[in-house]
Image 1 (cartoon, rainbow, N blue to C red):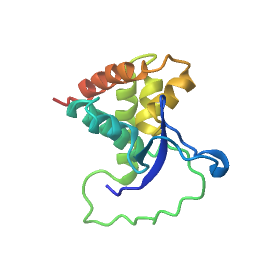
Image 2 (image 1 turned 60 degrees about the horizontal axis):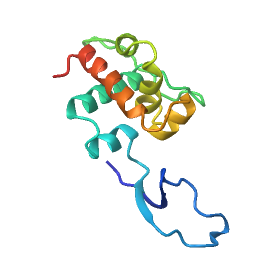
Image 3 (image 1 turned 180 degrees about the horizontal axis):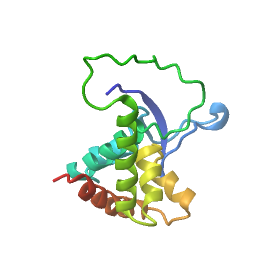
Image 4 (image 1 turned 180 degrees about the vertical axis):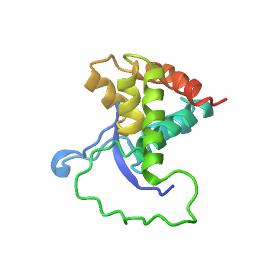
Length: 160
């Protein structure tokens, strides 16, 4: 994974996204943040998620991307594939449909009320504190709810 490190001011709520306006004063404490690291990988690297839960989240994110559920901002420039007699297995459209079915099954397995935090952190790559604020949850409650959701997703994907 490529590292994209930036220096951020460390506050009691965590790293501050923007620097001080006008550069008036130097922050007292700073931390290096890897912008290329997903929130799920960040939680796993710091011991907040087990390997099983991390793998479940990665499987869900993979199906989300394979199903091409993210918003498209521009025209698709994917090359058109011509079917030949040598091709075996599922067509690209069939793989996309299968990924969509797995994604929908995993989200429904997570259960009502858990899919919001699951989608925001795993699929949209939203930081946990930001997701908690958006959902109107108390600070540090999202980690527990995310773990419960990922446990159910791990069961769905049969990850041991």
